Amino acid sequence: MRELVARFDLLIHQKYSKMLQNIKFIHEISAEMKDMSLQYQFLKSESKSDKEKLKRLIIKYDDQSANLKHFKAHAESAKKKYEQEIESTTKYYERVIMEQK
Image 1 (cartoon, rainbow, N blue to C red):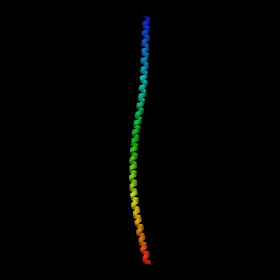
Image 2: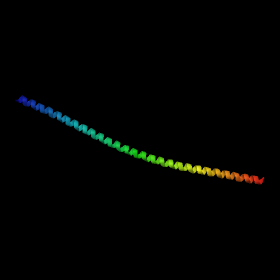
Image 3: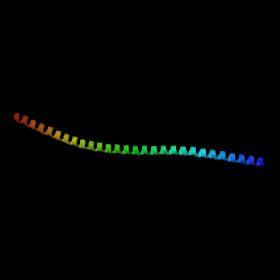
Image 4: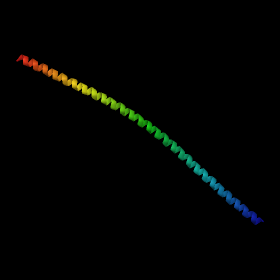
């Protein structure tokens, strides 16, 4: 009977020990999953932040592109006006020179 109780006690001890190992393993996996979840949330927020930065850069680029087009059009207009003034001034002095001859 003592041998049977000792075996039963050993069996219970082994099962209890195995159960404790499984619980420890579950806690380790749970901790790793929590860590991975935190990393995922961080990366997700970084990604969202990067998307927002990209959107702002695109808007800034579009604004600068529009400004560049505006300044280019203004420069073209000023160039035409300057060329017309040169042409008109040249014609005026040509006329003055012709009149003096």
